[in-house]
Image (tube, rainbow, N blue to C red):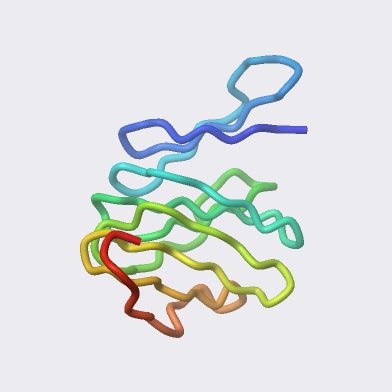
Length: 116
């Protein structure tokens, strides 16, 4: 079993729970804030706050396979493996970006309350 760690600036590291060593460090966008894993596909989604994007990482290959532009200052990310949707909370424009995980593209931007 592996663990993910967001490291500033611009990388995500993968390591083992039982052995606290870094197995891989993957360069992503500017200021990654949070990561989420799609349990069905193994893909990892990193919200890049300063880059206004989400990096999609192939969990098996430890490489970025897509970078998706989202709203202003993405802070949090959640994955629904059943619907193949990724939800990204954008702090500065008070919105949620909805990403189609199969096409790696934003399919909707939903306005929400202040500082989601």
